[in-house]
Image (cartoon, rainbow, N blue to C red):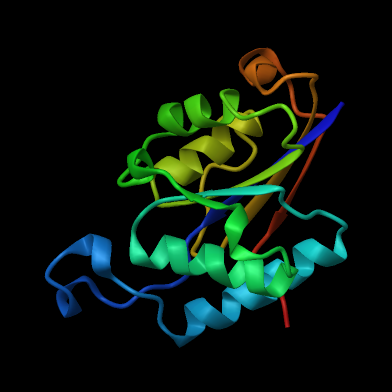
Length: 165
């Protein structure tokens, strides 16, 4: 059964010194625009998430909301995952492997270095760095999400906002 993971680094955010806490940093105009451009490109490729897992940081959760607006999925598919901030690829893998098997496509929104580490792990080192709003789409042929640890991707693609008009 085809399962897809959409890995998204949050959009471009304001400088750290504007907010007292890093977790409260918000997207700047470019981050919002890039979110709409990338999500529309994903939709044109025929991929749409059944579930979105996001960091609780403002910039990541806002990026996830932008994707749901552009993809017309509704925000009820968003689940905030506390351990995505600051996060680690291993924690993200744990969340992926424990997904309900009714979910066919999941999108994850997070931060570097963990989101890029996850993309590198799932693409077997092909993609080791995601810029802001950079996206890796990785397809697997697995029956259960718990099989993700022992599976090889059957296909993957990348979307970078700077390459979109």
